[in-house]
Length: 88
Image 1 (cartoon, helix red, strand yellow):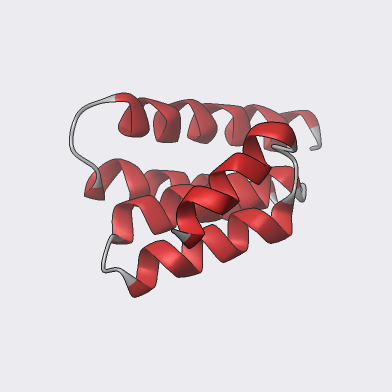
Image 2: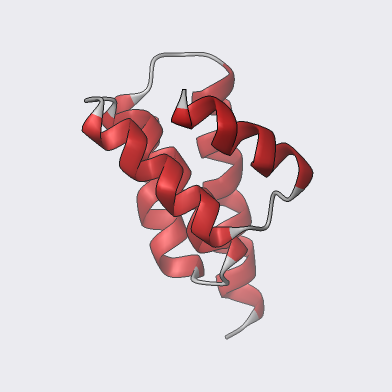
C-alpha cells in the first residue's frame, strides 16, 4: 500500500530522491532486495550520486529476474557511467 502511494508520487515527480529512498526502504523491509537496489539506484541518479547509482544498478541487475525492472537497472547503470565519464 505504501509502495503504491510512493509509485503514484514518483509517476508525477520522478526526480524525488526522498520518495525513491522511502520506496527502497519499503522494498527492503518486504524482502525484495532487487527492487530495493533499483530504487536506490533511482534515488542516487536523481541526486547526482552517479557512482553509487551505478553500484546499486549493478546490484539490482544481479538480483532481479529478466524483465522490465532488470532492463531499467541496466539502463540506469549505463546512464550513471555516462554521467561519471562526462564529469571527469
